[in-house]
Length: 114
Length: 114
Picture 1 (cartoon, rainbow over the protein chains, first blue to last red):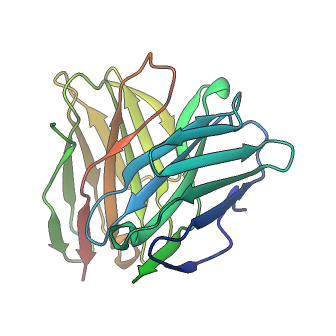
Picture 2 (cartoon, each protein chain N blue to C red):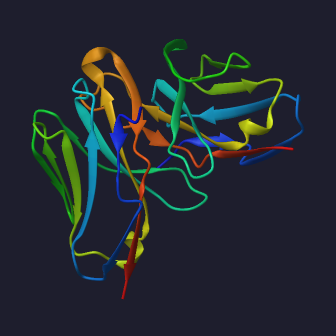
């Protein structure tokens, strides 16, 4: 059973506009969430994270929103740039349970076009 | 900045052979994680080590074993290789004691079993 779900396999956005990538989770024990960006033939690159005690975290063009009651988080990229084109993975961990492993979603392929 | 180093980057083996993948974490990182990413799939957690002790175990086959050495590098040993073992194997490292579980990934080893 997929505990972290990214229901949109792909997303196409025009350069300069906002990209919104969504992620849902089912395990209420998750208390830390991360977004990774992955280019072909490279390992996932850490992008931004959020603790379950917060509902928003911002870093430059990237903002992550967490809605605990809905078990939903989203990554906003504003403005989107062609270099943002990659696969974005949502990941979650349950540190309170003593487990630090990351559970990944299936990924969303973002294409930013001119 | 120094990143996670994995070797080899590519490996081709025949069925029933053995393979050893190596991971060198970011300096001062004391925790190492191994993930397996099959074609078109999300990374799946295999096993992790903290201070040379196994800290968590995921969906790692009994044919696989791993360890972390005194210099914190880790090796994933895979025996009796099967076609289904063909995948990208990522190593990630993190620093324990931090408030946040940010794992930094290496470039991966692409294993092809023929």
